[in-house]
Image (cartoon, rainbow, N blue to C red; front, side):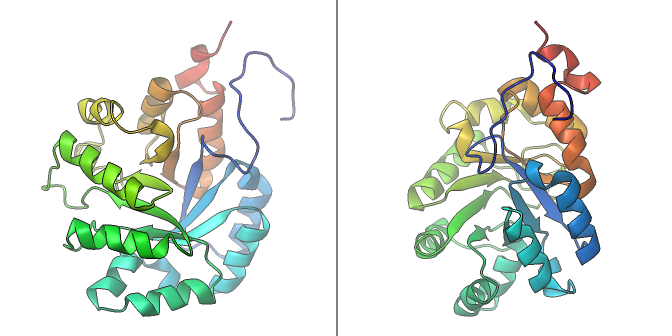
Length: 252
């Protein structure tokens, strides 16, 4: 903080257990990563290499090292996990995680159909050596999952060993926990929270209106993900009430 001001929400220092910010890297250069760490590294807890970008991004090993040296955990997007599962290459995927010294892994089924028993078995296997994030929800806008099913899936994945569960929204914020317009499915969220601890969920929220909605409902220390690299500082301003949308939430 450059200035002193009263009545700001408490924000823990890293390593944080809640109030996490997950940034999506969709192909940043090494120089962009260095610039990002300089400006927003302390505000960022996790970086996801979106979908399959880690397959084709240049200087991947160097980027991973930069993030990790800044105390930012990195992981490959769940779509890459699914690409390997669809080809029956799970062992190969684990070898890649080890090769790149990745300690966090995402398990998802947003694109492919796998039984939930199999998904939980992948979680159980991976959590022996990695910190597991599992994603719940479909990338298909026409596939609507009822609230009770979201709760059931999330709880089973937590029981299987997931560190956090991710509520699906894609990078556009228009599926899963959102309607096609980007509007939050508020009844769904509120029902999920009657059974699942908020600290166990990372809510994908790429749009500012979505970030505002979650902060107003759950406070500054809600876990938010799929944040663009140039939106991490603006998000922190929302968390602290230093932006018009949340300005009056923490005044005396």
